[in-house]
Length: 548
Image: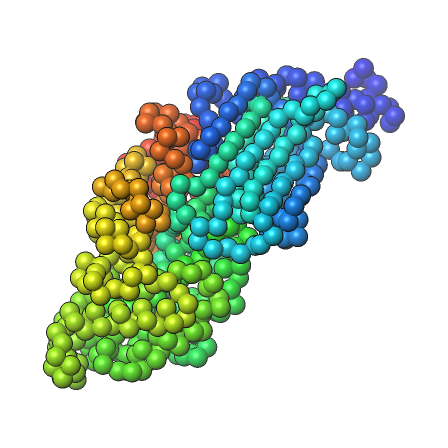
């Protein structure tokens, strides 16, 4: 037959015949995996709550179509999400034109359509929004065998999580040059263990262009992380535009290393299309020296520049002005006010501050409490729930606003104390979840448990989740992704998957994480080898991505 393929009227038939042959040859390739990998493992990251699978291999049509049932069809976020994942799934597949003979082409593939059913008519993204979904890849009942793929979700954000899982089921087979789903039929029922699954990005110690931040947000969606904690401002730089106080960003490193109001809005909108919140942080009263580059009156004195001057109304007027300016940009209900590492010696050593302290019968520690509580009042007046680093809880827990979310970082044991007093808590123990600690291994990250030491079920519910922290002293655009990944993925599975679903077998987790690291690489994310002694180091020698 092949010699006839040169004739115009045989070309199409020959092409279809070759595609059919290649599909038959590749039916047992399994997840697109090399035979050296353990094909009994489920290579979905993070691991779903419940799943069953079979032993059939299906082909997916490059012209995969979408139908949306329910309210989700009215939202651009879902349709854009489908197109985005379609580009990912068929990145290596050129496909076959469907402009002619589309029925004949569709019949060659097992899966040609994806149906998404969404119940909610809202696209509001709030903490605790329903991210659950059910994914079916199964045969329909009838006279002929027809496969169908369905994602059911309460919200469009659950549907986005389902699309991520579906994309991980799809693998390009280099032998047949087609996209396949192995181990069908699939039934996956999934939801997150914690509502808050975060990554802190510090853009004060080094500047990250908007596109770099977007690429990090994109990579977060692959691991189902859902909060970008944007540590915008610190001692080193104040890069954010605040129109009411235009001299504040004089504290930026340079005029090119800044974020306009429009930049911040674009980042938040981009994140929302991935189902990701952006929690901004304005750290006060410490870590604020850069503020005085434009407004030196905020410094206690010219040589002692932080904490911010607690004595002046201007200090609090400016904080209120900043929060008012950015409230519409950051709709997420949580706002981080910092409050960590406050050295009050400067207040005690500055004459007018010392006089103010004496007049108000305060010691520096009392002024620290006064400042934090006043900042909380301002944030709450803007309809935000305040988040503070744990030092505030350790110093004056009984004075904190009861709505405060305590952010753990100094070590273990703080969340149990916080929830015992009725506060909500975010787990970020620096010993295991600080990504700038390069000697922390993937398994130390993976087996860190946010609920450690909390046995009471009602108290466990007060731990809203956890966050890995990418502090910026030693990272910039040249190395940030390989410092974040793959260790952030280890925390992401701990935060998403139930304890019952997770395996205690270290070797199986390692194989699955190595596979996910390679998936990130294929998607353009510069994730470092999993088994590095020091994170972000390059490979020590030649070898497969799947074994490093």
